[in-house]
Amino acid sequence: MQIGIFTVGDVTTDPTTGRTPSEHERIKATVAIARKAEEIGLDVFATGEHHNPPFIASNPTATLAYIGAQTESIILSTATTLITTTDPVLIAEDYAKLQHLTDGRVDLMMGRGNTGPVYPWFGKDIRQGINLAIENYALLRRLWSEEVVDWEGRFRTPLQGYTSTPRPLDGVAPFVWHGSIRSPEIAEQAAYYGDGYFHNHIFWPPAHAAQMIRLYRERFEHYGHGAADQAIVGLGGQFFMRPNSQDAVREFRPYFDNAPVYGHGPSLEDFSSQTPLTVGSPQQVLERTLSFREYAGHYQRQLFLVDHAGLPLKTVLEQLDLLGEILPEMRRGFAEGRPAHVPDAPTHASLVAAAGGAEHRTEDGTEDGAAHVQDTFTGTTDRQEI
Amino acid sequence: MRTIVVVSAGLSVPSTTRLLADRLGTAVERAVVARGEEVEVAHVELRPLAHALADHLLTGFATGDLADALDRVARADGLVVVTPVFSASYSGLFKTFFDVLEPGVLDGKPVVIAATAGTARHSLVLDHALRPLFAYLRAVVVPTGVFAASEDFGATDDGSLDKRAERAAGELAALLTGPAAHAPAATERRFVADEFASPAPFEQLLREAGGRSVR
Image (cartoon, rainbow over all chains, first blue to last red; front, side, top):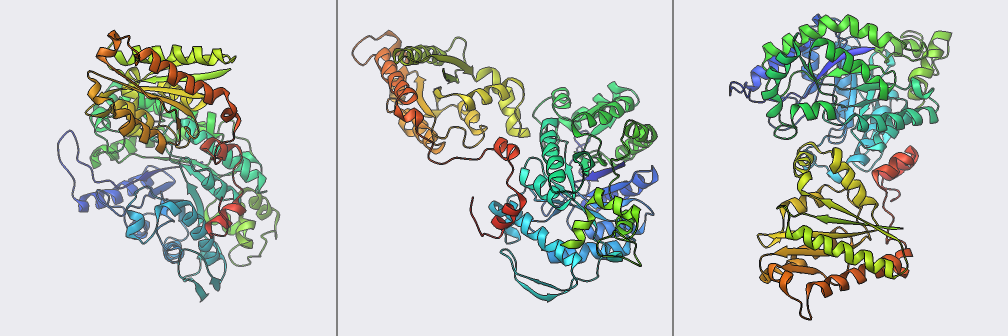
């Protein structure tokens, strides 16, 4: 089980002080938060991608490379990479480069983006969102898996004799997750390729996540990547905790009430019961988090949103300290009752092993038994064929 | 069994809007029964859903009674919708309810439009505001709209409220039970629930992405 955090990089006024951090402060805070995440033993740090104020989350690869240089082991990911409006040729290059710089500590989560004007700013049409996600990703896979690509599609200029450089580290592309709140096409896409599926799972009722995960798992099995309960599922989550639950509620309420996404709407109490938001003691956060399995099944990645709505850096770091304290128990809880055939989320090392090793990679990855088993779990055989 | 949902957006308790909604509900019930069909008339009042509607605008999802009301409207065979006139149009509360309906759920659904106001000078709100709204939503609006000014509740002449309500109810009953009731909707829309029940295979999505076929 991978446990980590994801950020959207919002620059938001702290409603309790009226103070708005500068972009510079927020960017540096993001780095500090990522370093803290590694320090407390988290597995993943993921950043969103936005191209408009009040966000500082443009250019995610620079951010991740910088963090990668200051960390040792944490996986660097995105939440999400805009596969609709970003040229897949640049994604192929940028993230392969990031793989090399960080020795393979990279994966990606694809998303379509929900900011209308971003599409026209990048020369795209939001009504083609699904089609862009599908065509661009199909091209991206080819750029990573084929040395020389001839390609013609609907949304970008054709390629003749194009080689994306650098080639993916050890000849293995970064693992990819697909994020979507409720577009069944994206669950279908993730299942088709045997990629991971991630549900944001913070601003929405669990029923949204449940129906997407159910579809993804069914179709993952349909496409022959393994049994439904072997599909690779990730969930978001959001908490605010203090040793005393009443303190947590009191301290978080002004941030909740003024939050950019849901502020000035439902009460903290209503929203906590309607969505996975948990505000309370570490024990409450622990129990709620472990209960996600009731509708998601045993899953592979849990990311928390901890640094939004104007929470000051000091508070965010305290939240991570508290998360660090319950982390061993959370890991034990996730391990409990987990069948042996449910795989972990693929990592660079496991993908390299599945492909037959970095040095002696075979096309079908069936050279040794262990690699063959891993294949079934991750669908990496399929990756090699495309 | 036909199900009719009467949506009313009155704000005071009791409200003239609900009074008209009750009257129309009863008239529709009689008209459908007169055609030899069973009918169930249910009322959805928007006032108790006001907070949930505002929350839905902000969060993007429906909760509790609102989710239930939206579901009942989606499953109804026909609707009666009644709004008070605010600033020469339907009220914001009334519009909000129809703003958060999943697109397509009113496709081909027979609807009686009705409104109340303090003066008959507002009566054209039916044809200037409600009819275009429900045309946009692809509902089938019956020819007779029912407008009730305060004075209508004390009038019994030829154009009386009762007669207009009966005519509209009769038109709705005809659509619900006549040949049109069995005609297929103009185009079959795929709703989110359909997509989850029978997802489009990825090969099809790939073809569509490339513009090689249109669903």
